[in-house]
Length: 60
Image (cartoon, rainbow, N blue to C red; front, top):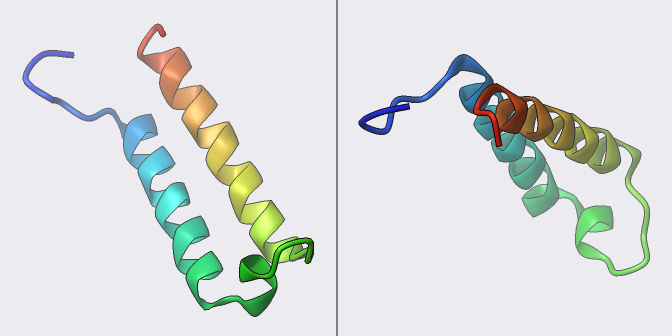
């Protein structure tokens, strides 16, 4: 990718990361060490998958 172009999968990964961070910032369970938040875990998993797909699309 030349000139900092962003692929759709890279944008999806960024959106998933933003959703996970925004949730964690407002979620008491996510901010408590040792606590479990099902929503936070799902958002983090969605980000991990999107990031994996973005890396694959970029050939990394």
